[in-house]
Image (cartoon, rainbow, N blue to C red):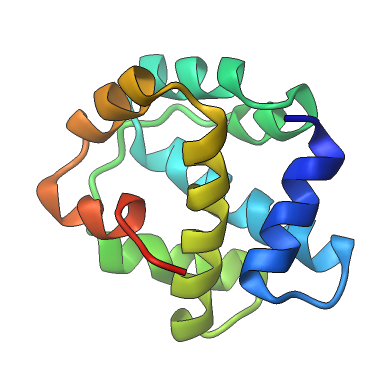
Length: 125
């Protein structure tokens, strides 16, 4: 999937008004994920996404320990949205990531996170 397709899919799924809004949500979600994932998994996921989106994993050491609720709060702060909207928008982003990345890689990435993060990956939009 190309960058523009990725952004349009997030925009549609999250019901956002513009490409810019979608980019902000993608960046907020993936930067927060980069903080939480171990560095090796961030590199793997980065390599599976369009290069322009993979850049959102740059500059983060990773491996921080925080709950999925804090994950959504951080996404909300970055995306300038309340936590309820941040949850729905992060789900939209991760549903597109899940389509792009091979199942085996996503399972490996999920296995590095606590069980509560299943809510982020197993979502219905």
